[in-house]
Image (tube, rainbow, N blue to C red):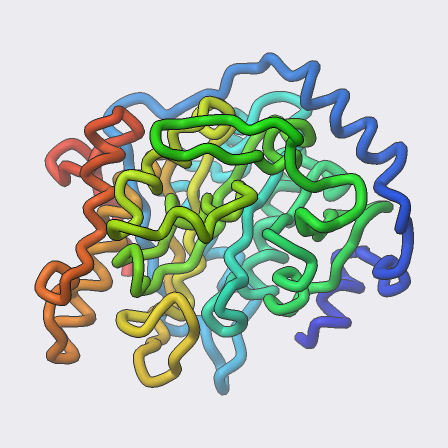
Length: 341
């Protein structure tokens, strides 16, 4: 499906790109009201955290993704992560009543090393089954340029999900600096003001400065000055960003579009080091998910005869830092890996 057809089927409207230049109007006012009024506590699965890593080897036909199988794979991953027979019902409990959901994309590398339109369409459909109407979904990135780089159309207002950047009129960053550990930054107003629940949607790839990007590293996209925080293998700053109270309070689910992954040369896309894993990952524990992602990348590096990330001098040690700070667990004995390959 091409981008135009995809957007049309989602009901986004192709004329929306140039609309509402003065901001997002009444729709945003309603979203802000829901965000302020929300008090429902999420229903978190009992027991040890679960990381679902699902693969469907038949998901591509002639290099085109089968959208029905993408949707089924996403639901399998969510069921596995939430230990529930019904993905939509479990997700509804996790998000809470009248949720306004923000989805942080990761479009930096562009297709195919970015969340695919098929995955995004499947997520919108699953959220709909969970009771979240398209008008209460905001897909966001650092800037509108990143939205279009990922293959999507900027949508600032109207029915259906919004696709916005922090440079979209009416969005942006808070005017005051918030601090968490070593990080001082103005935070995304999408996260602080517009939503009640956050879904972090990343891709799995090697990262030349952080060692790895999957879930937590993607949250650099909610601070206004991420370029300041890439020294020392991004440790402890990845953990510090994840530890902002608003993130800890609103983050409900981490998803990874693992249909295409990269084991060397990231964060940009290098075809020579990418592979089609045809997978989806999901977890409520961001640390456990990144720990599993690290193992996946290491296994592929070994298969290709490359040194480990530690041997290459860039281990994602911020995963251990995040675990020490209580953001989740990186101990495989303390979380369950659910695989259905």
